[in-house]
Image (cartoon, rainbow, N blue to C red; front, side, top):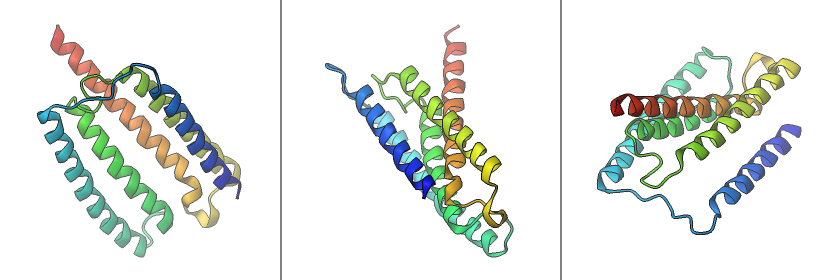
Length: 167
């Protein structure tokens, strides 16, 4: 029951923080041109195909008892994988933050959330172990932390590439 409180508290904190950051007076929303819109469509396609294939593969591997996770955690893995594929593809193509997006603010926020979730997930496993030796939905913080840190790494790689091309 305590993990449910933690998940709900984390979601509420994230929503409040997002609302505070977004609700600045005079701030415009991100705008996308036609090329960016096309890339977003391709990112959706890659994420969908990846999710379907990963779901099928994980279902088969779970049936063979090949991974130490249950079905709830594997569903979270597929979900976070799809979101991560979508965002990383768009970041690497340079369209994730739109034309007017503030990439530093959002990357810092994603980094803080990712690192916090990774630490919380790791500490939870260290303190309570794994029930029946399997990752369950309780351990979803771990997956979220890893996904968010992968996104931050993609942003940093993209920005480094942009800096190199300027010189």
